[in-house]
Length: 290
Image (cartoon, rainbow, N blue to C red; front, side, top):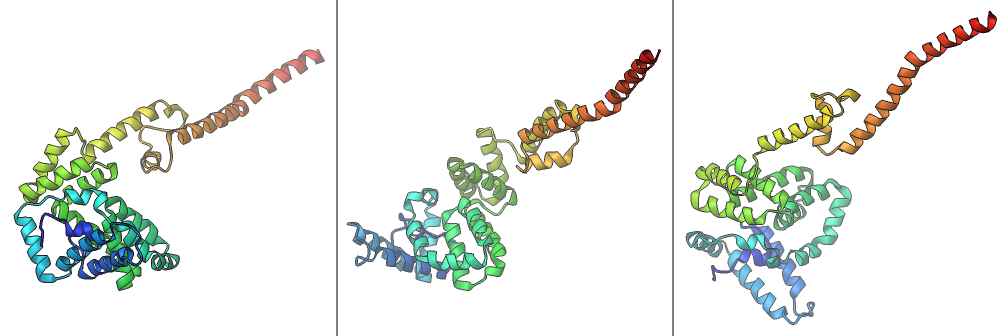
């Protein structure tokens, strides 16, 4: 057992992965890199690493000792954020046919799996294997939420606020800050997570969700003020929500305003222009009659 190696990364699974997920990953990778099927010159090296990882993680006692040893030596999780350690493309390929069948009956699985993949490809892999093994397709969203929470707790502590911060960093692709967050939580602990998050926000000049909301609302109000004379008011919450959710752009709003302007001109013509023309017509008719 070599605790300097990340056996979880070698198999492409999470440290929180259940036994059947680890077994499924091992079988998939063994099938992919078997010398009779894999033509690469590194087949022996890959199979040796895969077998070594499974020998430890596939045994409950050895896995527990491995986890405890890595924790006691304060091993970081940098390998987790480095995709070159993952063999997941091959593992995904082994289950691809079964996954396509599942998706044909439950199309929503695609968006759920994609959401998890943004957080971690291993998380998406665990999700797929869990559903294919346990047949819990009707509870897919609940399963995904539980896996996501377990992942965030394992790497970033139990604080919901820290989870929210981590998801924001994941969405922005800030692996550098995620590593610092991971290391800070491991050293300081979940009870000090607020201090860790505040320090990172200050260090990298990151706004809180409330500050981001206020800034976005301020930009919106400034934008609306420039067009409020054309039927959009400062407190147009409905339009703001559409814009904030990405369902309507400023260009679309401006296009709508142009439409309003055109309607306004038509209304003005009928309300003011037509009566004036009528008056002029009456005056001219009187002049001709005289």
